[in-house]
Image 1: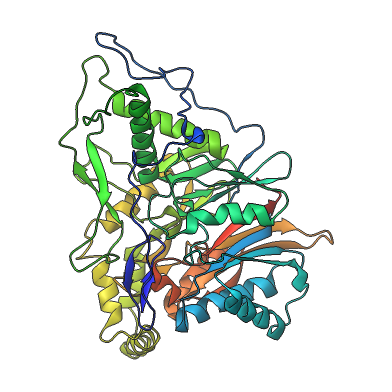
Image 2 (image 1 turned 120 degrees about the vertical axis):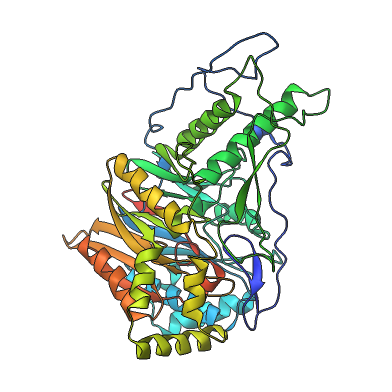
Length: 503
């Protein structure tokens, strides 16, 4: 079958028809709307300086904006969850998705609401049947939204970012996505129309996917690619407005271009999906030598205004090292998880590889056989996975180690978590891409649990469970080996529409 990955790429998985995904967003080609107005810091200029005007702009960062902001990952009870299903998803991938949904429905408190976006009545009937067969209580809390011909994907997370507000309303930020997601950007208005108390923010200035941020109660961790693309987008929008009566300048203050990376053999082979190339049109103006840094600061300022929290950027290059650092994963939620305000779990391919290499031959062969049957892929699949994280991506371990050290220097306690990216059409072993809850019920009982992707490889699954249990979590396993072959797990296929307390 042909699947759309959570990064927007198309690749083969047995038994699925191809889907049209659209084209990669290109900053500067976005249609300008009233919400595209660039909000610049009052400490900096509203446009680049004129000739012979020397300036060193200073950007002030806002405090969290009046109690509003992006939901945290580990705190509070999930009160309302968005899910969606591509009608063409079939076979074992569909089984993984519906099985995960059923676990959420049965395990979460019986007052949790679900808004489920589907392509048609057939899928609605299938989900309703599953709710009846699993004896899920209170079926009236399931709100079905049918898209009437809109071509959607599985990936509920990426086309919107849920934000809480002091009025108890939820705001859906329908930002510009940085990867193609079919017609998913048409979904947020449908969700807001179907739910009283959910407001749409159509601001397109941010260029990011919902999977490229994770937050605790104090801080948001943001992938560097999102910051870079937003900075470039703000710059190009500003150029269009300054040159209203003439063409926008081709020259750019950005030293590198971030371009789509499609390895030989087709899309979806490796992550990240972006690569940095030298910008042949880079220009440094004598009267504005720090222009790129200025726009990067403006982008960070805008993220902090929208998200209502400090933003810690993950994956920026350190010029002092011989390596070129960049995000370790195409979305930050695939390999980084804050489990409280002090502790962060960071992926570790080397740990996972060591565990696999220590398996007895019988267990190694048995799992290869099992995974081969699930994915309909022949050969030594585990070795292919190891190769994808070593010889095919020799800097991957360095990128994860760099992220871990960066967070340690910021004062966080860092715990390493097994992680392996999969080659084309093969399972990604991500134990970071999860859903967490931590709250006290009215009867005084306490809940701290994680809905954890697992892959049927006991040695890896047990290690991940041990780590979460050491942090006080009850582990609720979700069997997702086929879904993650499409490069996404439970967080990718869900989105928080309400959490209490919000944090």
